[in-house]
Length: 512
Image 1 (cartoon, rainbow, N blue to C red):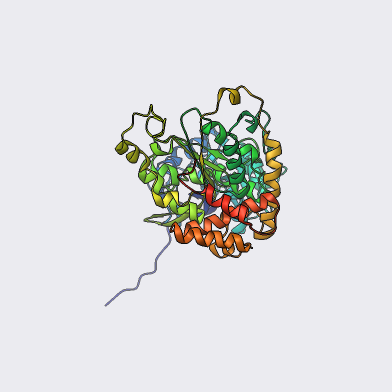
Image 2 (image 1 turned 45 degrees about the vertical axis):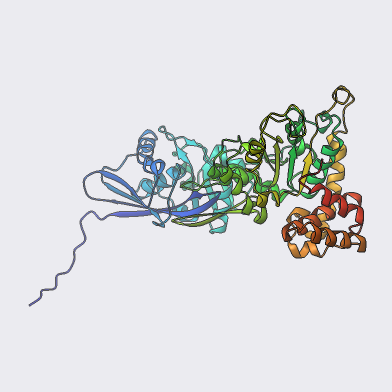
């Protein structure tokens, strides 16, 4: 016969405590529930739930911080579970939550409101807190998940204060949690990061570009509509100088765009002392890999296209880049986001940027039309083959850059950036009234582009060239977008024949 026995709990039961925290997944914060179980057994400290090396090493940081802050580290069997277990956890930002839950489980921290707050931060061995990446994204996620406040290192306080609708509690050491739990101490909410100027003092000015009227016009058109631009010319003609001054004629970031840029910079550890007011400018070296350019890795990290979100990505010496890296730009240029698939799922990173590229006409840089050019036709073809037709079709403006004369270089300064920026901002305002806040002509859908008002002469010119030169459907739509930008700069109500002819001319790969 079976005998039914009643289970008797151990004399010293295990104690369970939980805390909220977050881990970075790309540029987004994912909620993590820290569960700490302290029970009888040989002293051991285990962290489970797909932790990376930095999370596993939290055992030693938390142990030293607890002891050095005057607490007693429990000499029992400790298991820390990071839920959900299927999500990979990365970075040292969970130290503070693990320590708080461990102190609560060992009955050294009595905090009734622990379940209502989120805790993020790295701990030093003496118990002081160190700043982390992604504090802004974590504060926003804490608000979305229903937390009343977020406790984080003091150095991240101003950054987290950019997220409205949630309390921000900056702490400098682990020991301050006792006063916070007892209600004896309540730090004031820190002020948010200040807004930096869109054009910092001493920034490069477009007036430094002397002569080059065609190049200056191409820069203005590209900036006005957010179009991609390719400059082809000999070395030293001013291509890199012009690209470096493009941010000075772009409109300032709106409040929503500045938060987007700050969120990305924070997650990548690149946020400065203030909220960015100017647009990002990224110029990676031509040896960069495809993953470095568009993002990837495990865990997923943002690439240069995401760091250039709402700004400029400048590729100098375009034909020196790897072919696979350049081809990886095709989808992001169309969709404005990068989709990265990994075993754990698919992640999308924003990348609405202006592509600006510069290239020599051939390996020696002189060009086939120059009698001193020593490149063979095969070398020229192989050099230019890095830029595929599919990628070239996605570039709206192609500018042939000539070597300036001695008189132009020694002449007077060109038009300053401030004057050009006024015209660019006026054109952008017309586009936002037509398309919506934050949108420009380069982001128009095919349906929106074909709905642009055209004169009969402009429509006939586009149809004739589409038939004779066998333009692709993409080239047809991009010519319409470019013509609309020229129309916005002119302040006209419909695309005329002049704007359409100029747009088609600026898209030609063989014009000079």
